[in-house]
Length: 209
Length: 107
Image (cartoon, rainbow over all chains, first blue to last red):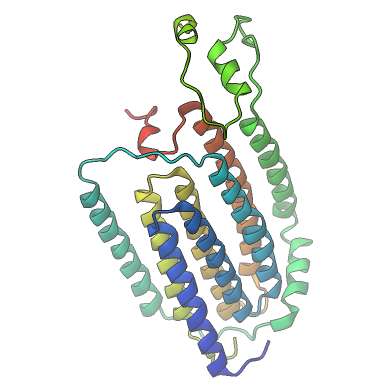
């Protein structure tokens, strides 16, 4: 991709503003649904930055995986756990925020100092530009073959683990000891998550150990 | 990048550093468990921008940073799936997403 340098600079400034403002919104906005949508905006802005770096394949992967999968997953999780609850006040919360803000600001200053005082070996070798996708394919099937295969195993493990963790089966008896399970758990597994739960009946409370 | 690059390398590094620090702040201060996961994604994206910038400016022929970025994206997807499943399971057991009430392992 060959753009005039002024066009590149304008694109970079716009994308950086989107990324930085979006990330601040993700962290600071009180409504978490807005945060999730802003997170999608941040991911798209990062994909734009990758395009500015001549990495079209990684930009496409970023859009597909982050915006298409991770962000949608987060939105589904918000939908599933969306209970409006008044969180209990914590003493010293403002002080904690201030202190952690100072620490993060210090980290930021340190990173900036490293970035601006190090003598990078610039200009580096001539970039491959549009051939980046071909190079990535060669890497993945020669010197990065083992990590590539391990990544597939990792994804399979994550998929099975997520299914096992998130499914709602409750056995009627304990698998190991054979004792009958807690009736409250079985009742809970039959109740859909999104319904308003009725007040617990006294009889259930009594039978529960 | 060509030797007279339009955008200096430090500009990318600064954006990445700001994204990472925002993620760290959100990770520490969020009360909502879903927002903690979102902050982790922000941090991973900051790291990815760093990798991509270095790969393009300093390693233009063997773009190893881009391969690393692809692996990071893969691991991030797996992490998000497992993390949200754990969150769902936690919510089912504790009926809250408040991080301050997940204190079963506090010493």
